[in-house]
Image (cartoon, rainbow, N blue to C red; front, side, top):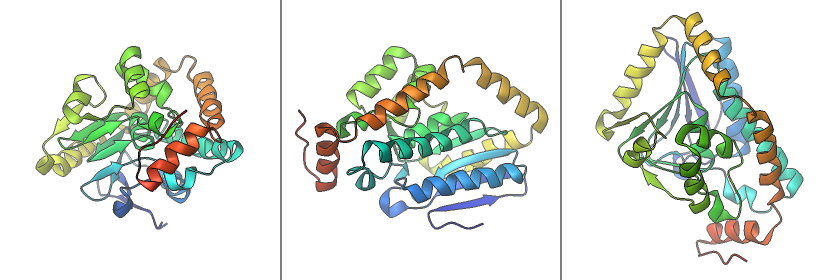
Length: 258
């Protein structure tokens, strides 16, 4: 299959790579892009991929976030549907039967950070900048960030990142455990290839079992938490701060929140 907003390939080592291919838009996630990622994940699983890399095209961004110009006028039911789609994609990454690697080059904000959080491993280029920036749009993380981020970096650190909408560099992201490895920009692609090949070379059945066991260890009440997050995120659509935050972003001005 081919798609307009992503590229998909599987190499001779059975490493699948899904690349969000909208560099002029900093790889922002449209509905079509999310649906394409979802379909590519299914194709990679059907093809028996032994490892999967999620990447962003170009040098500026992994995924700079969701499509704000699309979200700005969403009603609560429309926002709920968008949240459900984002959750399906993140859940499909998290439950993918082989290990997944987020190749975080450049910006990874909002929904882009959330897709990286759903991956098993996160490798950042030195120039990467990561953040859950939704609060400055009058909303909250809506694709798993409020649930996966605390499990990774701890409760207070997650609260600071979400409450303040901070953008942190790759070095700080590594210090707090948000990424597992930082690589010089000029060695980044080679390191991603090396790591993915090493994962693909491991015994596939054992790797799948290891991933299932590791995922089970952190499930707990996550399903309830994710359901709450979806409702809370969607319920913010139609509020003054959501409309103002997104309008200000689109109009390239400072927002005036209530």
